[in-house]
Length: 38
Image (cartoon, rainbow, N blue to C red; front, side, top):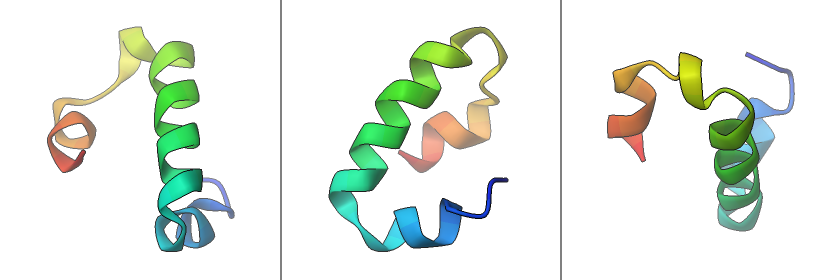
């Protein structure tokens, strides 16, 4: 996990942005656990 992850979890806006970008970048490699945590 990147260093910014903990800070991201504290900011809902950042979470949404990272989630969208992360999903688009790694859509093929996203584990089910990450999807469930959304």
